[in-house]
Length: 107
Image 1 (cartoon, rainbow, N blue to C red):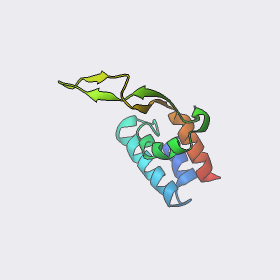
Image 2: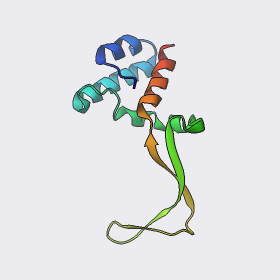
Image 3: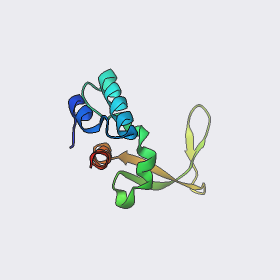
């Protein structure tokens, strides 16, 4: 897995371009506030929409089609096989996604 520290983020990203500055500052702030050195556990959500568009061959996330859950009573959902299908993302390859992003930013 590709991991990175605060000094590495600052060295590789800060001052490169506005997006790199934003990612470095946001990632460092999040990592310092809750992750204790795990650099991108929550900041991943900032880029998952773009990753979905670039997800050829399940490169960044795994998904499947499921019947749309229908709201029921008391916070329960029912599954109707006749309901429209929706794409359900069940796994995001966070390290792979952020590694790819950082490598493209610094090249």
